[in-house]
Length: 94
Picture 1 (cartoon, one colour):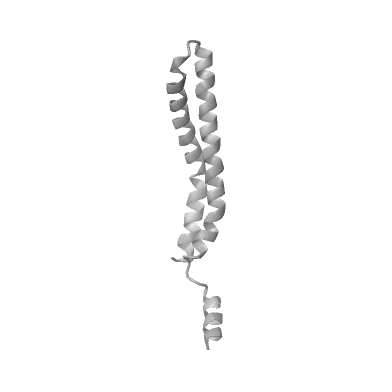
Picture 2: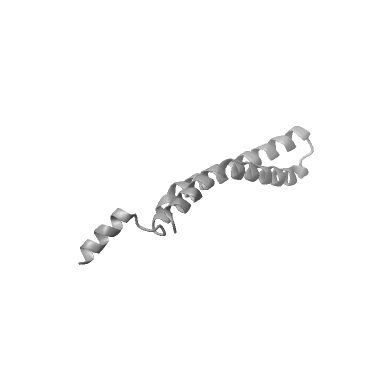
């Protein structure tokens, strides 16, 4: 994998972070609203839906940031070596 592609993947991954958090909170809001239909008071319904949305959003954000911090290490195994590293590898093999 070319180095520029690995760097591009890291940048795109970090730029997707707000989209991921927003979509997870949206799904959490939907799930919280479905869960809250059993309650009779509207404020309780809103509180349950908001709590589930916040929990889902923050958990997705937590997991995504932990993953994105490991991405450069994971991609480093797939990247082509730099030209200066190739010369050292050839010299060591001789």
